[in-house]
Length: 287
Image 1 (cartoon, rainbow, N blue to C red):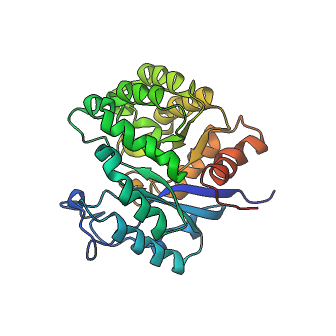
Image 2 (image 1 turned 90 degrees about the vertical axis):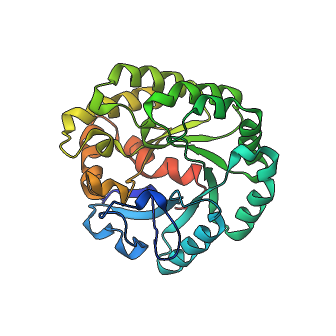
Image 3 (image 1 turned 120 degrees about the vertical axis):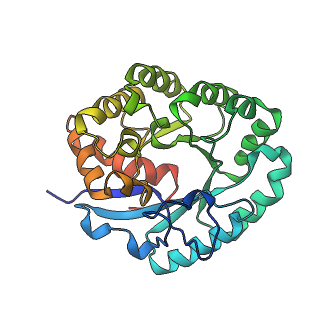
């Protein structure tokens, strides 16, 4: 059997000596440089065809410098084929000059992420005319929007999605479902509602981290199954969330967990989830 071909749609690279990341403080595992040469591709029993860099929640004002850093990483490893950058979309039309600079700074930019999980009132933010206008601007630049929230914020996300059916969107980490709180029923409701919108994809990523360090496959399987049932094999994406995932799992082990969970998929469907959907959504031009 030919080895699996994989696009990892959720990797991070950072260097706290160069850029500022307040959230890394007090975290000895993560508060150190992680560069593309550290990505554990050799440990993964698959061919890693491409990597998608996702912005790393730098302190404000560093979006362009972060892209420059990633471009340097891409000169080291050409598998970095796409970038999801940061932009403060809550500025509405005021974010347009930055978006122009972002797309001009790298031909690899494919999407924008504005992390929402730490916002005290996500509902108010996502319903604000300025935020909606900021997300709507992405269409002008042929960019999609990546959503990072927790399960407690998903109702607000559903309202945003209903407002912007023309904008491709990606739900990172399955919406960080409440695995450690056994919220499978709530998760099933959320993904069923979200999957009704054909512009939304879902990343199979971050689930072990959302459980806890003592997670079991039995804990994760209902969430993986529910995502597959809701979105089907044509709108799911594989992501390792490296190196954040190292708090709970390695990329190699996460791929193994998913292979077992997806054993009911045909080879063609598995290829779509691990490779084909990412190739299309991120416009990677892979064979």
